[in-house]
Length: 356
Ligand code: PHE
Image (cartoon, rainbow, N blue to C red; front, side, top):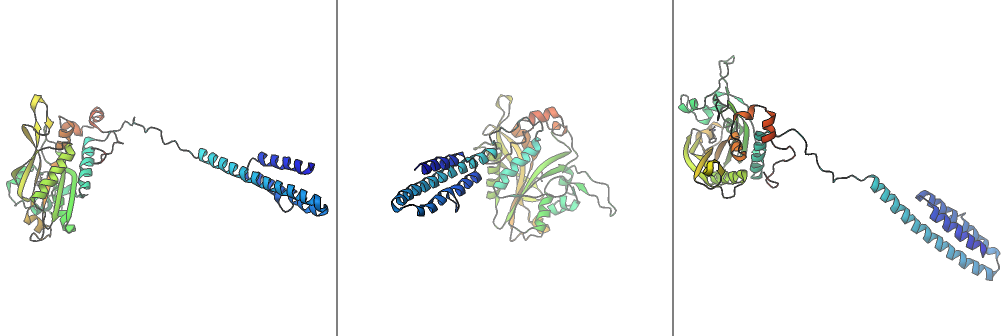
């Protein structure tokens, strides 16, 4: 059967020549469609005598199966090829290195705030803030500073010119006024930190008229001095990256806390340098204490029901200690050489898990 042989060659040739799914479908119609070549041949079988019909019928059926199988296999080849081409055209090379040559730097103050925020938020604190220009009430009175108490003078306050009502606002001398503002608007449990700018009329190698503090405030029903110690110990050890850093809680006085404690961390000055960790010396780094009942009362919180602790820390000071920055003044000089030396690469975001 010459015709079946040549039809076979022709159709299989067309199947392998089809270069796309549409072209292949055309081949299928030409071969096996209602008016297709094989179908037409099948229709012609009726004209043959029985013997020849059986033989031709078998050959045509075999050809039909062979062509159908060839169509299927070519179809899956073409589909795979089309998918490969699509994937190749959509490929994105994620192995390119990030660009380290960015020239901008993160200021050590910003970096330190980011670091301490990472630590305290991990402990469950949220960040709060308040105005830099304060009333005498929030900066002093609500914090239990009596009107003519010498502690007011210790703060070297910047006073603004009197306003129309004769009131003299102040540039806040600490972040503590935000304790009161926050407690007025929120009900305990409270767990906040307040990083921000503070101002005192003082200027020398270790004091700047504008500097930064971070305040902490925790208020709940049973919060006690043990929580204060644990919280600050964990913070200092995480921040300075010294797991066994010793802390010393030294009795002190603040009008707004009772009892009050200043906190020192261990250090060593052997060999002229300064190393933070167990040693023969101590460095004062923060003030703290149990929030005074009068402060809770001023903020509308019942001191017979709630109690808690607060702390305040100088950000420049802990940044200088952690990063070995010897002088305070260049912090505000916007000197690009200093920033290149002490600044931080922007993509190195501090996290507790990723390193501080
Ligand atoms: N506000 C105090 C200061 O500026 C620090 C402090 C805050 C102390 C909270 C105790 C509690 O020195």
